Length: 359
Ligand SMILES: Nc1ncnc2c1ncn2[C@@H]1O[C@H](COP(=O)(O)OP(=O)(O)OP(=O)(O)O)[C@@H](O)[C@H]1O
Ligand SMILES: [Mg+2]
Image (cartoon, rainbow, N blue to C red; front, side, top):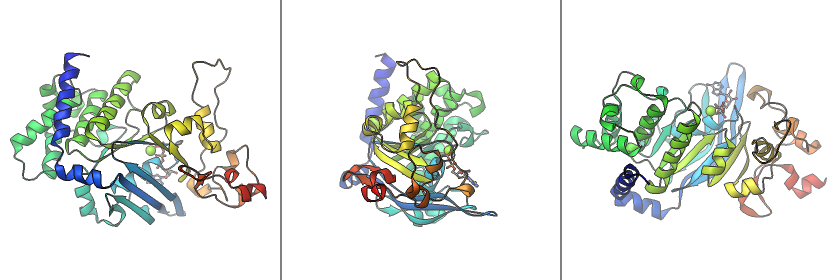
């Protein structure tokens, strides 16, 4: 291990120790940090009411990584934006369910109340850092401003020191230089690190990463993912990782939520999902991972596309693409249910409902 790594790790530990007693107590009291229960989001458009998210339930625990996966348009970003209180309003609106963070239902908070939560309790990293960085403000100052919003009693000098410390923490070489740089003077990977520093500066208990590395090249991608994972391990942050990449899921996730057309179709631990996937959609996603071991003529792809929200089929939304679909799948939408009584592996598919499937 290099000398820089050793010093960065020591600094990380110091930051971890700085987490207030109150926060540690809160984390200890309830193991579940975020409890999303029966969440539904509707888009009120000129073409009618479109169901962007339907009856979504999952929990996140301190220090764990939940991967949210599914093809484009499945509702992953909508899920993240619901939790952040950043849904595009109009047209989107939460029409049912709750999002409890340490017991407080975020779905019931006003915009102002929610603003206090964002940053201090929940941090977010987007795919494109320029969407959340201010192009005319130096990187260090942006991080400092974030710190000051959530710690109004702190003086500017202390906040500057803290911002610089965060820039160092995310492994930026020449931190003082980056502190004084404008976002356009930095590379994509550096900007992403600055955004991570900003998100982590207030030590949020939940970090939501929406495709954090899609725009970066592969080596930088790996470094950023390692950084997020190190923060999780050392600061105890719960991480929601939204990604298309099942390879990343297998490396990073403790739990996985597989989404399809706004519905949760399978939810279990990563090891269970990769060794014992049940929903035909999850199996399709896993089979689409290119393998280095098997020589194949053609890569597997799930036939068809995710339906548009205004063209959702009747019954199970996946049935037009499902090789096993039967009449029941065309008629009724299955709910999420425990597989063989195992609450840690839930799936929404009629195949696992003996009474329905046997009919
Ligand atoms: N502002 C909006 N107005 C209308 N429809 C929207 C809006 N934003 C998203 N949608 C629709 O909501 C659905 C879910 O979108 P979402 O952005 O959550 O998908 P996603 O899973 O994040 O996809 P991607 O992998 O492409 O980021 C899609 O059908 C999308 O077309
Ligand atoms: Mg998205």
